[in-house]
Image 1 (cartoon, rainbow, N blue to C red):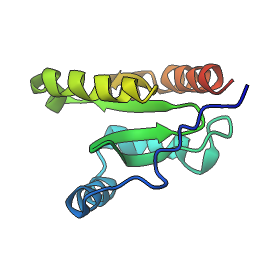
Image 2 (cartoon, helix red, strand yellow; image 1 turned 90 degrees about the horizontal axis):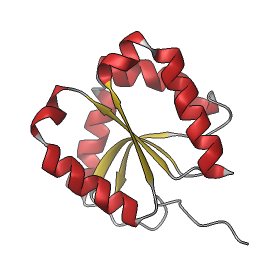
Image 3 (cartoon, one colour; image 1 turned 135 degrees about the vertical axis):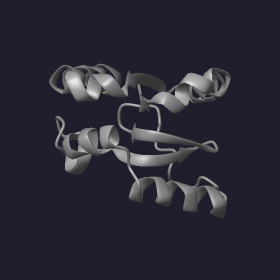
Length: 128
């Protein structure tokens, strides 16, 4: 059975404003994003390739692994006031057959090793 194609980067139309906003977010990462990115970049986590601030269907995912079809969202205070927006984003991503893993920023600060284990296990399960 052929594997499902989940690489949404190639051939995707992205408005220039959205592309520039994603670049800005990469330059101005939150402390939690910076801490997690240090362990995800350059295939450091079990050999899986992650992109940061990846535009998918007009939404910007904090981290995205195409091989596993996994979107990682770090939830800080801004998410307290945008539950409807987040639910809509999750629905759109689910329609793409992507799995969204939401992680509160506080867990990055207090349980980073456990979070990394959860991400690695999710990648292995989804890519398998």
